[in-house]
Image 1 (cartoon, helix red, strand yellow):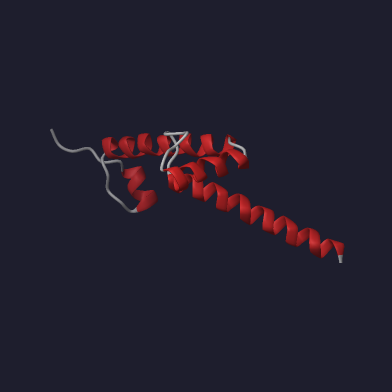
Image 2 (cartoon, rainbow, N blue to C red):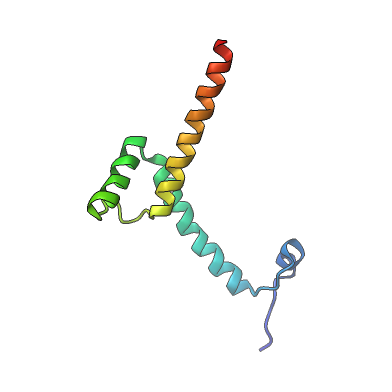
Length: 93
């Protein structure tokens, strides 16, 4: 049986992929979204404790969250806090 390719995907991205490849990639990205949602629901204290446990004791309290996702979320929060402090400082002058 000949291969079937998704022409809509090709028009949007310029890449030729079969529907199975597209479905597999979308299933893999759903795992990432679940992980991101989990991290976003954690408090900053929980994120710090989890990161500390991994760095200091090489143990994890949450096996479902990668180190990269933890670091990304903590970095995002730190940048938002820095921006908020900068704006508040400028408003106060």
